[in-house]
Image 1 (spheres, rainbow, N blue to C red):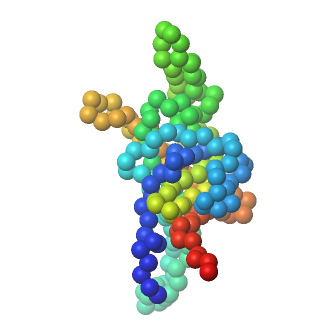
Image 2: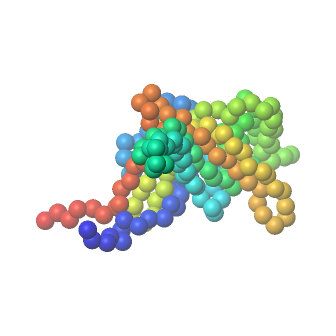
Image 3: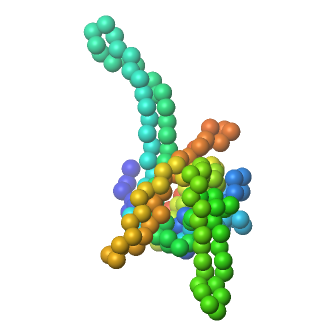
Length: 194
């Protein structure tokens, strides 16, 4: 096998915004280079820390009489995605956490800017379909989440030194086929035709 520099990528957000969401069941793009389907909305900028995908597998071991591990059985699996919405005043981002019914937006007028009112009710976050849309040069990566729910919300710090963030962790729920997510890639290196 030959080393191939074009297979090394960064996870930069694509021009579409990087983190997009839609109601459950919204159709996904078929390939990493396909356009984002109608119905997906962006939550704005994500912090410079980017997006972190985490997989954890729980297991149990079986040992023989002498204490040697002779079998390992997977007993659980979890897939999460964590990132921080950098646009704290973005209503679409707030709706992914608190639900659309708890976020009221009043458009800007000659007297005031756009206003947002969030009701903190302690309800579960909505289940949504998500796309993480990334590009690096000619390469493209799309991480497709059929059912993701904000399961953890990080602390918000209001300070003069740093931007306020909506720090979230999505818990991915498997679909009817047991799929938590799909990852689509295109390395951007096209075949040369004679």
